Length: 210
Length: 208
Image (cartoon, rainbow over all chains, first blue to last red; front, side, top):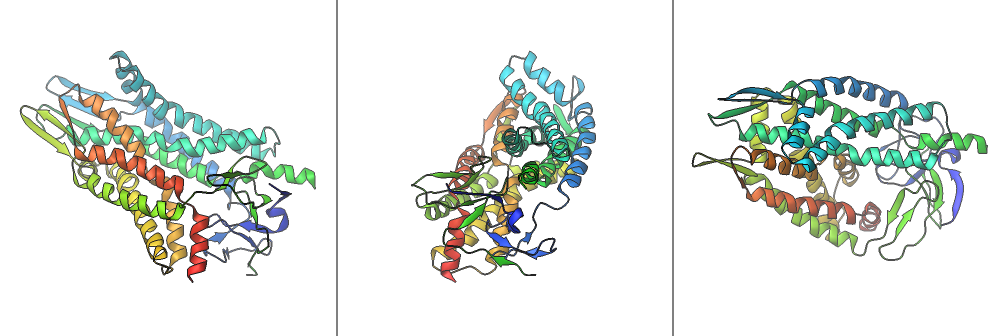
């Protein structure tokens, strides 16, 4: 592939994120629209760093109740118990379904945590205008975007358990407040990843090239 | 606002992940063009992308309808079977005063996949018949926005996990919707793999 070795931004061009064409617009023009599909155009996602930080910090705060508060209350003739995410993992581990324990541990505990750590790393390195490991950091961002949705797993498990074990006299399962906090973490980190603009990773390269 | 579309003989495109300008090249069948600097996938060439997307979308609509009308799983207890559909799950959460969680499940497993399938049909079917649908651009943007929020494959894993959990309480009866959701998961993944927005825009320009 022939390369022009310049960024679109340095030539005053913007990529439409909806339909993928290049458009030229006056620098710093606001409310520019894509000539083909009408989507708003901007050189970089607006206020990318501030928005990502805001969403990320909110997600971090929600991550605490998500892990401490119960996801489900089970009450039966034999008593009642509350399950947090971690106690669910432990339950599967001790009852011999170690593969399920691993899936839930990765999807519900590791993925949100690694996602938040990765976004902090990306934000801090962009704010320091770092030129360290550009390709690897872009790959990290791609991974964060791809993997985030899988954290919804526990929400669906709670939803199905609650719906099925409602109607009978033997036992009832009720959703706990942890489910709300956990859902918020997943949605907020997804929005945070969308608000981040990976092109910011590459912008410091442009400056040194002139 | 002085916005002008760039037109050249050899189209120049920008990488959506690192903003590098590069010239578009013709691809062999099934080839993938990647950004030379960051490795992001820029575009790919699919044989019969348009027809395949339309066919797979039609299949997905049928599966989606079945998946939402029949029970996903049932519990066998004391000689009676308790079953739940996906929508009933949402209703239960809503009534249990977990409106936000119920809404989240509804949006990610019913609303967003439905919107995605509707938008695809709306865009592709008239084009197949040689006409450009009205409001093509806004519907196309809805399609792009909706995509990351449809989570059929995650729901499928969630159903499997709860199957194992529930199997300890009582006999579990897999419902018809379980199989249709499994099939829907693969068909939706195939739609995402063959869908080529570039070809869509070429066809619209030709149809107008």
